[in-house]
Image (tube, rainbow, N blue to C red; front, side, top):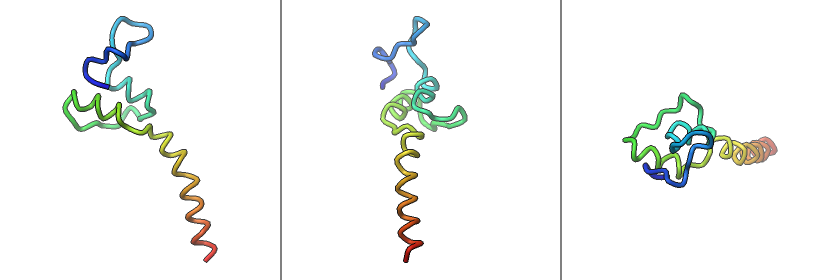
Length: 72
């Protein structure tokens, strides 16, 4: 996702989506801060793993690791 956002069009308005809207689509909380220049923020959001997806993948792994160490 780059600054021009030509492929990412807002569904109800004639404009591209903002960095914040893109972050919401990726499940980032509204108070998450992307500490980068605007052009880099689009890239960060576009290349990120959505936080809720990362949590869904990590949770069972953590549970398995805990179960392993508790069984020792």
